[in-house]
Image (cartoon, rainbow, N blue to C red):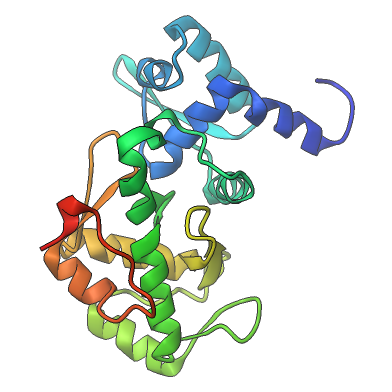
Length: 234
């Protein structure tokens, strides 16, 4: 596409089904080869390479070479935020892995680029607001002094004021239709959860497995807790 507003170019790139599936697969903030993305999107490796070349040229995907392999990832957090916003608008997710029996697990706990999404993440955000750790009085959330103490106590690094990325912001969850925590704080929470063994990332999936200790920390007092998936009950 050579004419029209820039948004039309990006909409055309993202709107192609195979490319949409590839981008959704990269939403777990991990890199994948063209062959892996070909299997995700159901196209041949040659077709996948052609799609990835277009996404890379447009600045939506970045490539890193290591030995004989080329690894693809989302170019930056802005691309991830745009994709998450589109998933929110859509009534269902776009990735094939999110259909069928796995759908309940993705809705329960998953990665959203570099932060946590799903029911558990929304419950944690709700708890943080109810306890006064986060002030949600305005569109842009604010980390309160009590919240700074609470997150440091949990071992979650506080946002760095020198960085351009927002310290904390709400991210509308496409499955819960309520916000979870994004921004620097959201990324720090997910990193701390992984390091402390509160959640485990599944290979080649956005699904997060929440451990017993993770439930104690992340969702001990939800306003209206939903039943946990059978495999997560204890």
